[in-house]
Amino acid sequence: MIELHDLTKRYGDKLAVESLSFQVPKGVVTGFLGPNGAGKSTTMRLILDLDRPSSGSVTIDAKGYGVLKEPLKYIGALLEASASHPGRTARNHLLWLAQSNRIPVRRVDEVLALVGLTEVADKKARGFSLGMRQRLGIASALLGDPEILMFDEPVNGLDPEGILWIRTLMKQLAAEGRTVFVSSHLMSEMALTAEHLVVIGKGRLLADLPMADFIAQNSHSAVRLRTPHPEQLLDALAAESIPVQSGPEGSFEVTGGDPARLGELAAAHGITLHELSLQRASLEEAFMRMTADAVEYHAGPEAAAGQGEEHDAAGAPGSWGADWQRTRKGSN
Ligand SMILES: Nc1ncnc2c1ncn2[C@@H]1O[C@H](COP(=O)(O)OP(=O)(O)OP(=O)(O)O)[C@@H](O)[C@H]1O
Image 1 (cartoon, rainbow, N blue to C red):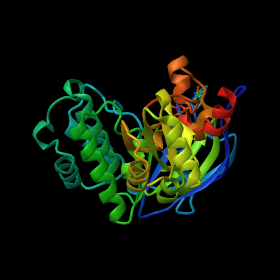
Image 2 (tube, rainbow, N blue to C red):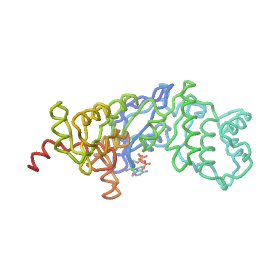
Image 3 (cartoon, rainbow, N blue to C red):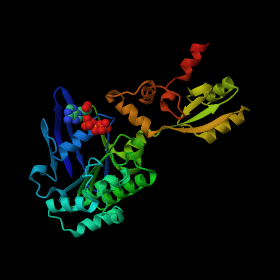
Image 4 (spheres, helix red, strand yellow):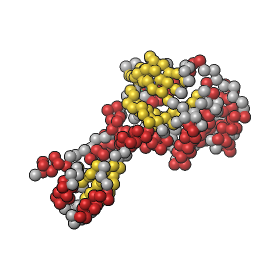
């Protein structure tokens, strides 16, 4: 288990990590999420003792990293895909790491096979694709057969096959009872992999909860209706006390509504429908709303729209915010 106790890291005036306290449990994949510049890499470097905290501390199985003898046997990390020497072969890179931590040489061939690099083991890393470098980095992390694994943005730049491979591997490592801590800035990716979630923004803890709770709290749905007879539809909904909001392009939305019931209601009143569809809120948007105040680098107006402000992308919960009753009164 990894434990952070009031961890703070300051670079000059910049607070990269501020009073972070949380635990990363064993046996599950824990997703570490935050927008760019949130402090994820800094936190991971602090866990690995690659940087000194300004205050607070980190423990790995109740010990500081500095006291771990042969640390690769306790904790393996993928921080940067290009961390291997470009002039070294994959096998020599792993042999060098193995020797430094008194890991048996046969383990090198085991991990090469595990990550699918056996055939290119004697090729220099300089010729490796990003996916192959990522696999070599993971082989390095697995070399000491550690109980704790940390991956910083492991799927960045990978093709779909590589992404699927990493997802499966992380889940398998957690199923073996290991602690798996993986950073990402994509909630959609983490929703497929992680069982637990730690979210930070501007160095501060924003959420620490099971993924299932996050999904339950944020996967609201709405039924979108579009009709050439809006007044009749609104009257029919009002008669049944069904609250309705304005949707994009003249449509209406019933949060939490049942499409079958609403379709039957329209039919019973002889109302023609041009659309009856279920809209699901995306977890990515829920994550962006949670971190909206903690985003350091906005790319421009389109990016700002993605940070949880009202917009009309299909299914965007932001578009459910307009209260139709008020809109209607205002237009009368
Ligand atoms: N060595 C350093 N010197 C000064 N500032 C730093 C240093 N390392 C990180 N920072 C700053 O600390 C903040 C957190 O950076 P960090 O790289 O940890 O974020 P991150 O969440 O990993 O971001 P990303 O998703 O973009 O990799 C940023 O504002 C960054 O500019």
